[in-house]
Image (cartoon, rainbow, N blue to C red; front, side, top):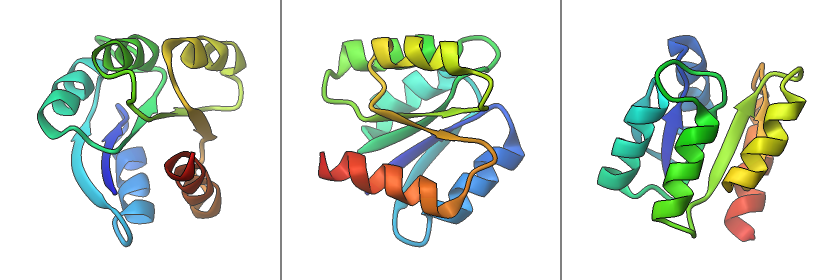
Length: 118
């Protein structure tokens, strides 16, 4: 599966890449919502892992933009546990699911497989 990773933290992007690259193709990494939207248009990934809180354009705005362009886009939000309110906004913006930080390999892969199967 082609995956786009979006997080303003290089450490978090590295962590997700390590979890995913064994079985999936990482087509790009973005550190803000603007880059995520551009990379989505260029690469047309099967799934996007999207951080919520980022500079320039946050993950909710970027998800909204991506799902407006491509109603079939599959976006998984990456969130800290205290961001419950933003998760509701993310789902409204078109996110299919979410994973919480710090990332656990098992939960990341479960969410990815669940969305891929859906």
